[in-house]
Length: 264
Image (cartoon, rainbow, N blue to C red; front, side, top):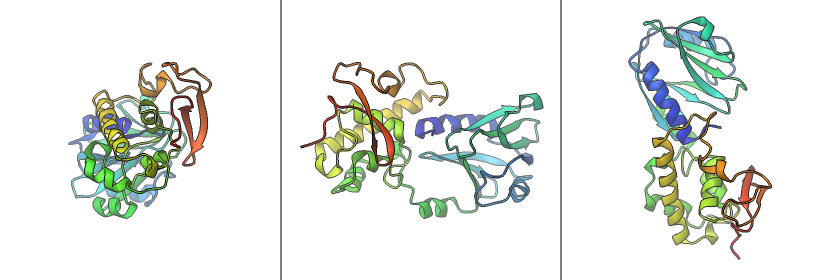
C-alpha cells in the first residue's frame, strides 16, 4: 500500500494535472471504491466544480474544491493516477475519470478495487471522526514521546497506528526498526526514552528524504531503503544474520534476528 512518501508523489502529480482545472464532467465506470456516495451522485456533485488544490495528511490525499468540499483519494493497494487526452491512453483499470474543460482527462485506476473515494463536505470533521493523528513530517518530539509513553503494545504496532502518527506503513516501519537495530515486536514500554527519541529522529529523517526523492511505488530504485535487505532468507548486507519473517501487529514483518534482539 502506498505510504506517506508515495502519496506525496501522487499529490505532486495531482497538483500538476488538476490544480486550477474546472471539471466539465466525471465518468464513473465502477463505483465500488466510492464509499459514501453513488457514482451518479459523485458525477453530479463534481460537474462544473473547480479544483483549487490538494492537501495530504499521512496516506490520505484530499482534492480541494471551490465550494469548500473535498474528494478524498485513498489509494489502497493499487490506486494510481493517469493524465491523458486520447481515449486510447485510458488505463485498463480506470474506475472513474475527471474530464476537464481544457480537454485533459485525469483517470483514477485501481486494479484490485481496494481504494477508498469519499465526497466530503467537512474535511476536518472527517479527520477528527477517523482519529487521524499528525502527519509524520509534522511530528514534534514532545508529542511523540507523550503519545508512546507507557504503551505495552509493540513498537511496530504503535508506529502503524495512524492515530499516533499518520503516514507510516509496513515497509517503512520494518526498515526503521532494521536501521535502528530494534526488534519490531519489542514493547514500547521496554524501550526507554533515549530509544524513542532515536525513533522520532529516524522517522523525520526517513520521511524527509523519501518525500524529497518522491518515489513511484511501482518502480523503486535498487538502493531504496528496504530493497537493500528485506528478502526472506537473505544475509544481512551488514553481516549480522539472516533475514527472517514473522507476524507483528497482524502484519508480515521482516527482521534480522542477530541484529534486532528483543529487550530482556
